[in-house]
Figure 1 (cartoon, rainbow, N blue to C red):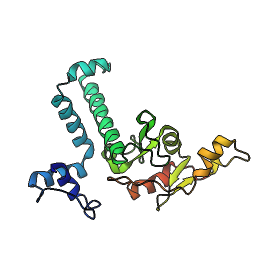
Figure 2 (figure 1 turned 90 degrees about the vertical axis):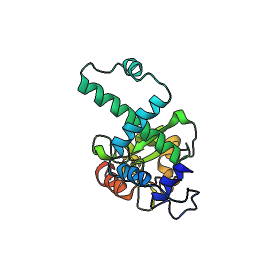
Figure 3 (figure 1 turned 180 degrees about the vertical axis):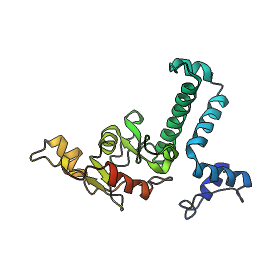
Length: 207
């Protein structure tokens, strides 16, 4: 119920019947505002707190991942890993651990695909609305610009995929998905501005 207070602050979720407590507190509102303004920082703090809550030895975990020796490098790598895990968990949970295009629900075959790439916008690295849950094939195709989504969240495929005579697997898994509508998540739906960026800067619009 407490967690639902945050959902009640999300404009997208307000239209739904949310079983929240009577009133979101000032602290809830403040945290929600911080998350919307800087999700990368909140994600790092949340993952650190979660690790400590579960009595994990953070120092030993850092050593296991062979963190670089310099203090600046250590902070950057650890923070980045925490943010990546927060983003992955948030996006997959939003899509109920199913690929938005194929429906595959084998977690080991799912990725949280950044719409605006990790390297482009620091502020959106942990933003779940900058992510889509896709299986590994569609994640790679999306990341490399072979597929994108239009304003109605339908698949658009690159002319690069239109081979003269594609084999049956190529045809079925890539060409034939054009026009398929993305299964919308229960929360944190993909941001239209991010998708516009993907269409204009990542998508291969020419062969």
